[in-house]
Length: 157
Image 1: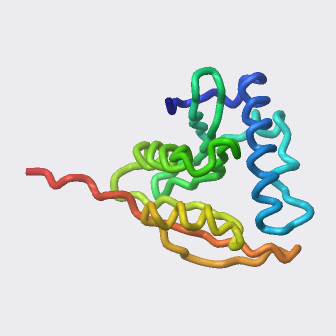
Image 2: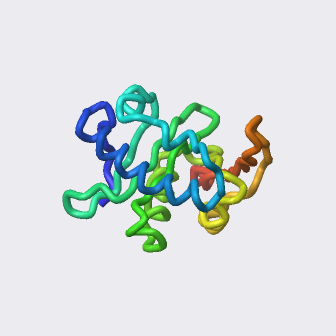
């Protein structure tokens, strides 16, 4: 079940943190970097984020989280994490659809990921995202920015 979660709650923030540690450790190894900033994010930092958070629950276990920030122009996905035991089971796709459902019709959706994170790029491309730009960070990590536009509103008859 996917539902909004209150990341400001210390217990929920701790669960998000634990989930991120497991998920981002796999991503760190996949992209081949020693220092990966998402692994340095603490539960307290999560609690202070302005994003909206959605949790994917399997009973009482939090197995996936998406966070996003919405403005009038776009909805930017800040995180998409799934517990490694649930990779390739549709969890990320379900979270991505839940974020898109919350975006305004005709609004741009954006997300960034490491260029070497091919599974994430494939996921986003399967959902209609296209690579919009590539950026190389000072430490040498290449990121890609992907975007898509949600379906326009239905015509008024």
